[in-house]
Length: 108
Image (tube, rainbow, N blue to C red; front, side):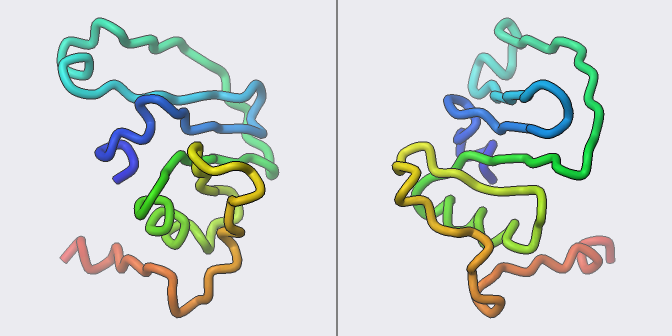
């Protein structure tokens, strides 16, 4: 959803705790089709217990993405349009307000 809504075209997904911080941007539109602006460098990732993946989202998408990852210890969502003080605590979402996806049902 966050890639389809192009949140990652201007703000990176950030992977930390696996060596140097990795920032992942995505290409969209004609840039994604022709691949002329791709930058796919090989990298070495050394996983650790303290890794974190931070995903960019704003507006309604921030709320949906935050609820989707609320149970994750390693994935967070940040709003690049909000100041740090305005960022809600994504781990404090009440359990009944969280989105649950039954992936097993998709296999049937």
